[in-house]
Image (cartoon, rainbow, N blue to C red):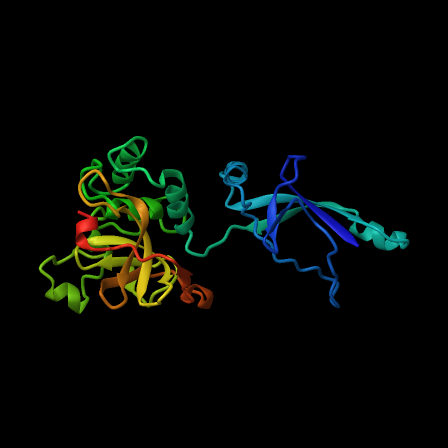
Length: 284
């Protein structure tokens, strides 16, 4: 039996990770394959939000997470045991899969259920606008586009991806699209974006000037489910960061950064029990 413990760099406290949907601090009963390698699929994101925040803090200045792997081995073969009794640095590259998604999810978890005119969300909305070309904006200004832009701005890879009027929903669409040409809105367009098939965390633009991120389909598979800001309310002051849905085919455009390669796994949309109204009246 081989047991491996993962430690954050310069820290003797084991980090938590998820294996087989269980949160653990060590990996046990690892099998070595014919090539002498032990391959274990784990998620470095702990289940606990508090543990996740602590882990992000440890690695916030590193593009590569630096971990130490401590190994012990039980058995009579001392040579075999010594082979594994080493401590070394293990580099785990951060995921490149739609890196803007973790920021949208974190904002949802942090501000879930809070109306836009209440603290601390109303102050946070001003921060969303600060990342846009508009520079200023309040909670009583439509802020769905500012939310989308803020999420991209937090990433290393897609910071500055939209240099147009990126606080406006239609400016996350494609200027050359036939719908855009026929539309009275005439969006300036996302120059570094392109239309695409739906995938997990694609940008969706709705025809009544709203934008958000696709997260899946509803249980009937006749609606896209999306996560975004400035939605879900019935009037000014009641909008939130939450899920919404729209009938498939009724969207204005679906977009992604031009240099983002969608994986096959991302094309398989998750099922959500969400049928919230995504009409104009719920987004101002």
